[in-house]
Length: 193
Image (cartoon, rainbow, N blue to C red):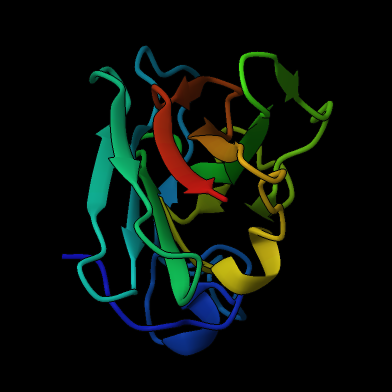
């Protein structure tokens, strides 16, 4: 189960330097797996989210699975995110968490929708690309926390409402360039005036 306490924005690799699955840590090139010439499968990948506020919900998505959704009941506490990827044949070169926001403001009947352009992942963990025959870690784990008080700053107009929807997803790439993506994990917060 995902931790239900606030975590600073650091990866598990910093918290637990003895975890052999952490890419880029000193000594991670020793041991691990040897990258083959070819690999017909992509990494396995999971993304979890859990709200730390009282009564907070949690949800998870996995590569090849179906989309999920959850609701934030308060804009206090944190939304803990955990992404994990594993490829026992070609290792993990990069792991990303994407967050695409949509904000809907309603004042009576007319509603306005804004969706800022997102070009880059919100969080990234990567190591230099390795070639066949080289050693690599077979897994990567990333833990991040979004401070909801700082992230959910929108307020509803008088007599109206504001809805913030985050479409979260994760992407992992192995050292041979094969990618896996999760379906979306939709997180919604709605506030009325």
